[in-house]
Image (cartoon, rainbow, N blue to C red; front, side):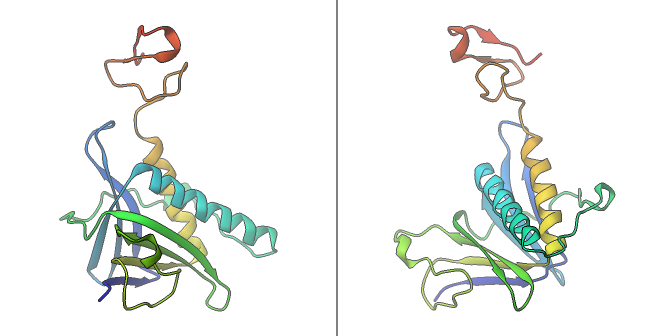
Length: 184
């Protein structure tokens, strides 16, 4: 039996981190009526979700739909809700626009040995990996994109030469013949 964590227009849906830059763990967290579900996610997956939602919003805007912007003062910058106890580690993700409900659906699926067992977005299959399904308004999607972009960018700064992340003590840069480049 597939475990489905479903949130229609949650009070809060955010990406957050725990730890110092370079050692951060990323999480998705949905909250509605004191029910909190947390999913462990990779930094790259968070970036892909934000980029995918941005592409959908751009396409809707090009199609003539009014897509809201978020004011910087309205951005949720609060830390993740405690305790942070992930239900699963994210593996597969999906996004969809539902014209009739005017909501975006975002699904994050747990790890699975069989990629074909992962159902399509909005498919209510009895089998498959655990899934977090969140339906967002356009404004909620915009807020998710803004916060996620900010959280992802808050990590280590890239090296000006090779674009790899700099540790506080610098790093051995492959573009400078192995010399130690400092973070300064």
